Amino acid sequence: MTVSIPGNHERFFDYQEWMRHLEMLAMRMLSNSHVVLRRGNAEIVLAGVIDVSARGHSAPPPDLAEAPANTPILLLDHQPMIAEKAAAPKQVVIYL
Image 1 (cartoon, rainbow, N blue to C red):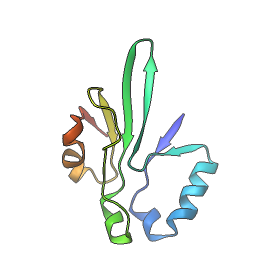
Image 2: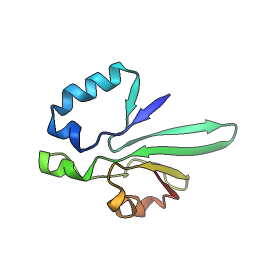
Image 3: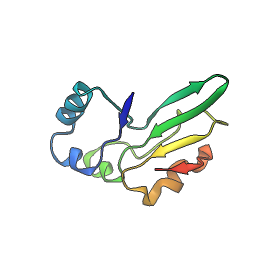
Image 4: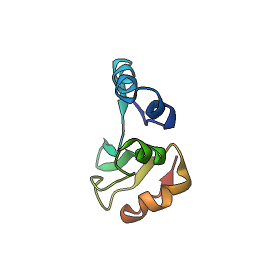
């Protein structure tokens, strides 16, 4: 599985077309969403948040509300300057 998160340039240049194109390349886009990876009894969440610049384009702010609690989370954030704030409610342990 290949995952990615959108950054600021996709927002500046036809966001929906970029999302369709990247998904056609078999990339799962994590925009305020997540996937749970499992091996045996172990789980880890791979989550991605919307780029902070998206707010200027009528998009929601970065949000991990749907990610499961009490599971380690790897967070993908295009501009990690706000990663701690986005991750705080979920106790994210690793930022990427």
